[in-house]
Image 1: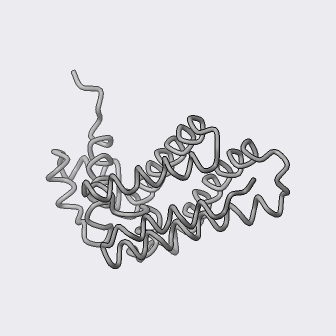
Image 2 (image 1 turned 90 degrees about the vertical axis):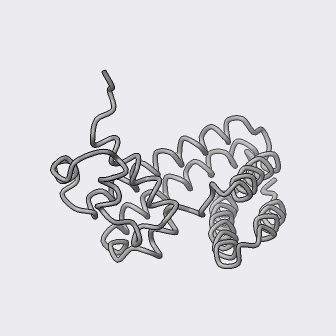
Length: 187
């Protein structure tokens, strides 16, 4: 007997489709068909596509924070962290499994993003906290102002580099991202 509920199957399929195809181009009927559930089940767990979007964002947030917690735990230096992170991004882009930041993509594709702004901002704040904790560990004497500035620049460079890569399809932008992130050396 499977412990995966219809809600789990729906969310799992929606995560894949929203991320790969985009939120606005993914329809409920496609999610229902590909998750192997009925319309009745879909609407029992997710009364609307917007409700599913919030579950998607929360699930992506959990995955992102877990990923960064693991990555920052394994790396002892800022440069090691940047190189490991960017290598993963480039590998996934090259393999066709990377489609950019799920939060940036959702914010730019969904008419619901304004309504979901609080959830998006909370996600960015949680991501900031993870990065701040790591940078503080790497550079214990870093000032609060420098810490805030460095995290802001990391996130701006990340989102900008991914947008340029998304627009052009040129993986060189991911190499530029790594280069620019390494110039930040917070130590």
